[in-house]
Every structure is written in C-alpha cells, then in structure tokens.
Length: 163
Image (cartoon, rainbow, N blue to C red; front, side, top):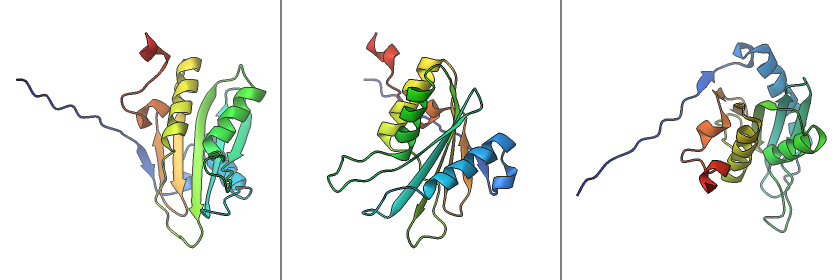
C-alpha cells in the first residue's frame, strides 16, 4: 500500500502600510474603505467593503448586506463582482480589494473571502482567462496581496472540472 502526502502552499505579499502598495492597489483599497461606510451588518457588526478594478479603469464597489433571515444576505465581494459583470460584461476584473472591520476591534487580521466568494472569483478569473489579484486588509492591520483568486482555492472546481 502506497501512502503519499500532498501539500498545497499559498503565497502572498505582505505590506505593513497602504503607502507600500502599488498606486493602483492603494486607490482600490481606499475605494473599498469608502464602500465600508455603506455596509449593512446590524446583526454581526462585521462590515466588509470590496472594490474591483476593471481593465477599462472603472472601479466598482460592493458591501455586505445582511438579512435577519440568514442566509438571505450577500457578501461584499459577490455584490461587487455581480454588479461589475452586469454593468460591464466585456471588461476583465484585474484586482479586487477587500477590507473589513468589526465593531469594537482595532487591529483585525486580514480576513479572507468566504468559500462562495472564492468560487465566484475563480469563475470570473477562469472565464476572462486572466488572473485577478486579491488584496485583503483587516481594520488597522497589514495588507495581503495574492497573485490570483485561484491561489485562495486549492483543489479548484471550475468548468474544466466538468470535463
């Protein structure tokens, strides 16, 4: 009997300051932080803002929208991606910035997107045949920059998986 061990490695660039980011990523993070102000999270008190940079220069924002009837709400990332694709269906999503804050927290660790958001990011990335950078930050914390949405989803499931 053969036993093999597989390991997946996820890499990210880590930045301590927004000023260390590329100018276009800094602009994207600032837009995501602006979006945070309109998050609707009366139950969890966990606000998330997302901003997507399209290849035509447009920046599209989204926020989490909770609902008392869980799971009727939607995450900030999917709000932004669905809006971007519905309004600019031919444009590629080059990067997404995701920021979060939690009521009462000062130094929140960067929070990764949920599994559903990762899967939707991957779908757009595969369909557009171009990688989408993912930039995440928690309140007052470091910035993590991933080269691809696919980096966040080991053992990816995409249209190629369907054969």
